[in-house]
Image (cartoon, rainbow, N blue to C red; front, top):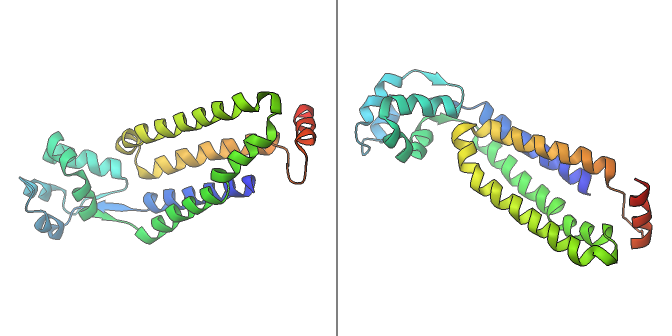
Length: 193
């Protein structure tokens, strides 16, 4: 279940990366008219008709025209009015990721930790891995805004898909099947690996 769940996670992240990677960003006269509440929005007229392949290229162009502060403060509205993307595909990818996580990695990790550690170290090992998991989760949440601003949406999903792929290879190589085995049998399998 863990291996198939991780494959599902990689496919879901790939769908998201493809969705953002195939997006185009283009300022139109209609978009400028809809953003008249933003000071100096007419400066964006110099970008009308120019198509940008990534959100990073688009943000840099907007920053060059509107200035750092206006580009930062209005980034979401500029992207919303100028992005042409397959939102349904991206939504399916994100929902699929959530389902894959809750089907496999989320709950199975805790069962697996209680099965693979001997009773003598289980009381220390499980809290340690809970701390490690929480720390990595917090770091991901803190780093995500920086990644979004510097790497772009498509690259971020590819990056996380790559990390999951590395984890999949490691688990495939070292994780024994624990179904219908006693804790002692699992421990023997781990000792052999």
